Amino acid sequence: MLLKFAIKDFRDDREYKNLSSRTIENYLGNLQEFHDYCVGKSILNVTDVTQNTIKEYLLYCQREKKNNITTSNSKLHVLKIFFNYLQEIEVITEKENPTKRMKYGKEEIKIEVFQDSHIKKMLGYYQRIKQREKSFYAYRDYTIIVFLLGTGVRLGELVNLRWSDINMVSGTITVWGKKRQQSSIPITDKLMKELCEYKVFCQQVFGRVSDYVFTTTENEKLSENALKFIFKRLKTIMNFTDVRLSTHTFRHSFAHRMLMNGCDVFTLQKMLRHNNIAMTQRYLAIWGTALKEQNDRYNPLNNIII
Image (cartoon, rainbow, N blue to C red; front, side, top):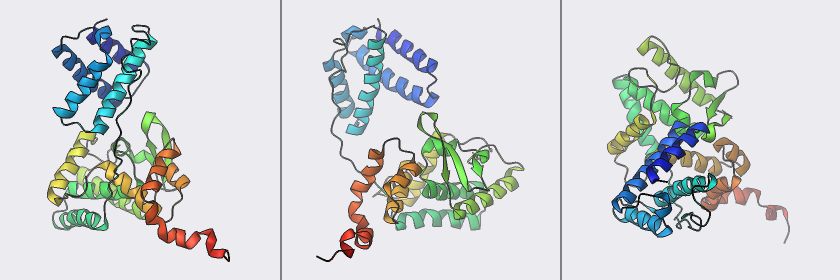
């Protein structure tokens, strides 16, 4: 089978299995890049792709496209899913699967978090604009930052949040996470107050409140790319050189501060909606030394005479 037709069949299969459009776009983007590379090497058929082909492609991405090891592993992950599908529908055999014995590259785990100075600088910038200009984007972006710091939600969860997902009585929000799983998480009274004030401001600006919490200046749903652009613009203004300004950094910062304030790992797992607690424990392993105060307070040796 030609590689381009195999990719089309794979796309149809993912659509049939009702994967999110974002996931499918990610798959197709990676597979199209791989297909273009193979065409350049005169590799057109699925069965002509070997393990060396994939290794050379990933090395090309690292050297020419400056992909880091995390990005390379993500691309290999997509290729594994693709070729496993072709094996499943018997286009290739297990022996012909070029990804079968390929291992992921070793990643250096580095989790960045915002310090107090970063947070004060970001919030202070928008507070000044709110007081001086009372512009919509300042109110919206300020609320986005406060919301991310108070919930640790993911990028997709934030842009898809509707006002109907916020329960003002119980103080909870409903988010749609990975694999479109629905979860309910609590929010603080402080955050609820900020959301209420922001909602009133939206009503005053647009005359009506959108279904979605965070919108464009035209009161339309904010896209993921638009949110990324907001952070890209803000990073330029803030001139942060020591930390990445992204939704995930807010998520890491939320986890870091929860642990620093004494939150247990099981509660944090539920707040972050990790299916596997091993992911949550990565935070604990990295910031374990930062928990010295809690250890000094609760360590069992405190009450044992030795």
